[in-house]
Image (cartoon, rainbow, N blue to C red; front, side, top):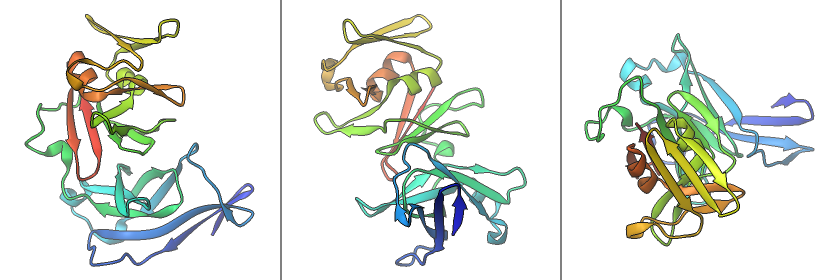
Length: 240
């Protein structure tokens, strides 16, 4: 158990159920206040794991990710992280108490041949995971105050507009008097009315916790960006 000011947190080794050979290190993580678990979703915590003893090769290191158990669905949610320059330390962020650890993703998505458009080092690649507030822009881990979700009416992936728009280099403005968002990206000017369905069943922009969420397929198409849906990990990639 470790202590930080008035809080304590525990990191207890766990033995995963089943023959999950890719679970290299597994722990139960919890943050406590007065010996009771507390919610810390607004302040993600960095987890640092020494991986020197795993003897991973370069290909395996390229697929190394953190994970957290989503107890609602009983599945492991993969979390991208950062590898130290010498390859000995892996760091990722979590925002809830659960079983966590590191594992090898089955594939390195950004190297898959079916990715629709070649990617270069000059492109911003955004990765968001459904129902999870932590996302990445290239190798930088960031946190949103609202998580992406699947719109049950249209089966569309809804993402926070401002974080995606600004990561793609767009300007995003809120016009409260007419409940519209204005997006300017180069010569493209896009207006999205809140709670009004988009053409061709593309979904409906909504406001959640004071943030505008939009169907990423429609917005990406209009801004000339590309997307890729990773159904296994419930993650969407956007780049331009």
